[in-house]
View 1: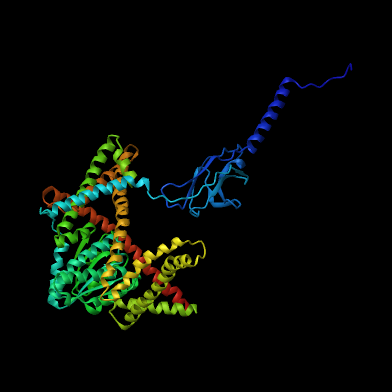
View 2: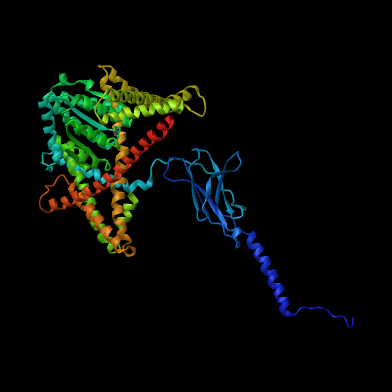
Length: 393
Length: 217
């Protein structure tokens, strides 16, 4: 053994070898060791109709190399007797919640969340328990809205009660409504008809309901003056309501004989076919007064321009803010937004409607106060009004 | 067949545009055709998307036990019967019955519409008006000016819509500012919508120039 030299690396080299070994082993371990999404949970989505399940998870831990970073998450689900299948698109890597809205109510589903890395490797989470979507009777997050509505309703009912007890309620002058008598009188003098267009809203549309109550008041006057009142409708249900309203108005005025059901007719539900039809009626019958009251869309200017071209006095009213400019430009009088809703109270002077109008003013006063107070409090760093409004909206 | 369709569409386009000159037989033809087609199309759509899937199929399945339907499907008879009351107007003696479906429709419609209006048009917008003030420290001078202008505009416009107070003195002044805000908004909406209408006209002219004239040359 003498003279045989045993090659033994220096301590520095030994240290380097160990370092390379440890680092290499460690890096490899991290690259392979992307942790899958943890704590995956699937729950029936609260406050819905039972058509969705919400899945939540904790994000997967990325590997160190770029190829092992999580590119996104894929949700997979199965029914009790089936295999897992993909649901929805690949979700971005920052996502930790997904609402599966493609479920069938009452069917149990189990989910896994799959992390997909840049190089396409996948890491599946554990499987959740089976969960099924069920509908709720009450949307608990809407309770503040319900309370706000209750408060608003109390204000209206209280004002109606006071109005009915004989207290006089003041209503400011609305020029567009004062022109109603003028328009009807003009049509009567000229021996021509009045055309009342309710727009394209359905029977549950608030503007259409307001328009129908105005129509009731207009019909009372036309019954008195025996002026023909023509109402083309675009909704069969609205047609039936309108016929009832106009007939009641003629009955109330003691003129059932003057009521002609044929003057209230269905045209079509198609928007521009309706506009073409009303235009045709305008140019052929040349009504002396045209009322455009209700919900209107792109046909508003077509109707108002044609009415203007035949020289009719036009009174328009809508809450559709994009159509109001056209009515203001082409009509003689325009009821802007809420003036349309105030119109029935203004025309009829009925205590119930007047009280309701005053109740609405209280509501506006509340909003007025909320804005002023809200701005002051926000500037002072107190945000409970904003928080409340956020909850109810 | 496609060329024939293009010619029909071009002819009807000219018929409708002839109204710009005056009412004439071509316009009347197109108008009546348009209304007739729309009514016919509407009836078919109502039958296929309303009557059959929502009324007939569930009821039939409940009666015959087909598919996944249960006997609970017979409950569909209630809305179907309410809907059938609309036909009561065909009888003078029973026409009063139509008031029931009408009352239900208006009641349900209002019940759905009013909370949505309160939520979207009142509370959400009031919240939107106040939101900039909750982050006022992070806003630029121009954004702060915008937020203040927004509050002034909302308050003045809201004042215009108070109906149970006389618009005299300060209230009249504030409501006049409100009208000014409204008119500025309407002017902007007018310009925006006119641009949309011009785009529709361009689309139609493009059809005539390229599609229709394209079949000739």
